[in-house]
Length: 291
Image 1: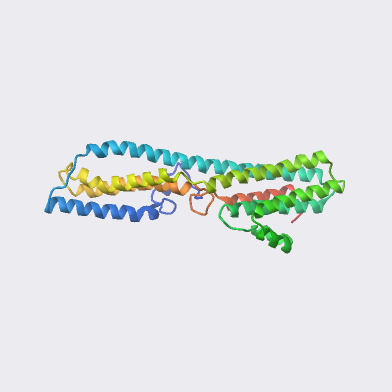
Image 2: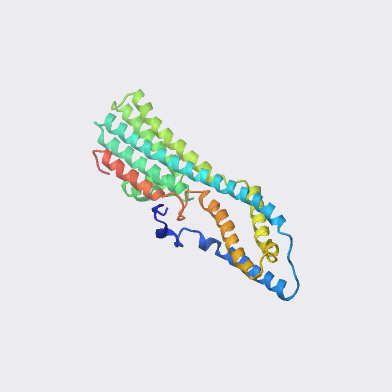
């Protein structure tokens, strides 16, 4: 995610990185070149203007579709951020209660912390269709790491290991059954939050809606020169208007595409690496043992 000051316009007004200009430049350029051909044909070969009222009416409907597209995508983006915020809070609660109730079992505290961090890094990578425990893998048993990577869901493997650690602590007499259930509730919430993220990641917007919007957008932008070519005394102004309008419309649609799955590695996705590193630092600060 790109960090910026929203009050300083000139700091980012001309930025290319993260603005999606590269992603839509091909479509906008093709539309602009097409408008050049339409204007040339209209001036030198045969008039091809059409009434602009159709594009006026369709433009209103298209604007509503684009607004819905971006709103739906931003809802997914913000829900993803809330879910990861919940994971941050639950890791703090898990470490706080572990530090308090397992003060006489430092090895168990260390193991719970390690597998908790493994869960967090595994969650990030699962949402990117990868399997990895990140830097915490170096602190874990290599055989267990191998088993986790071979399992269908490494994050669930890590969650199971945390629950097993708590079970062993109860059997050893370090905690009672009620404390075990209370601490394990934090693990359950971590799993729930990850499930919410997976729901967003694996459920794109309805195919029919996306296809219809894109077809309408392409037809609108590529027929726009025909509707504008007779509105200007200087016909070549149509090229600049088409360039501007196609940039606006294609850009809005691409923003929706960019943020509808906010767990990737694009410049406008959530900063999951920074969140994981923050959890790592918080964990080490809350524990009285080192990894």
